Length: 171
Image 1: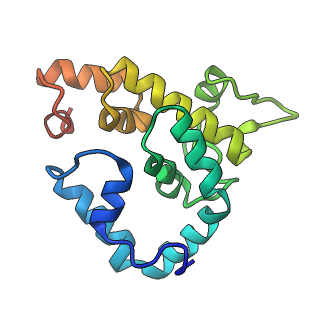
Image 2 (image 1 turned 120 degrees about the vertical axis):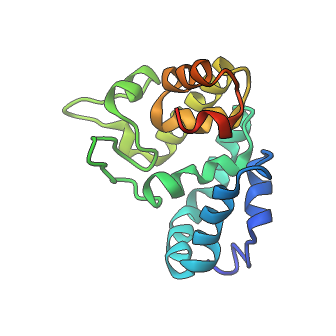
Image 3 (image 1 turned 90 degrees about the vertical axis):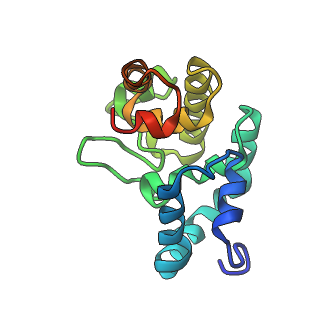
């Protein structure tokens, strides 16, 4: 893993996301958690990610997204294909069943495509693209909406009177 991800700095990680996060100090704290404070954990998780890396990056690029967003599965599930959250979000990409079905994944008693990392990655990229488009192309807001949903982000924008990510966080 170390040879695949040599001394990733916070700046490199942020640059790979293709977004301007200079203003968001808490993101720097999260990057520090991964790249400095919990190196052993991060090494294991990135080792899980490495076999999928090229495929995920191609999928995200094909959807016009920064390839660094393929690392979202690190945060969502620690790259664990069979992860299940207390709320029922399942798979590496942590889809709820209704969202998975809406994104074209099969979820039934014989097959749960949320458990297929590549198929679910394509659905995650499509969801992020669809959400960003519905939020005026704002990738940062789309990432926020990945967990809470675009309607909640839209309500927060309406309540705060701005599209500024920092300003809508309390809402």
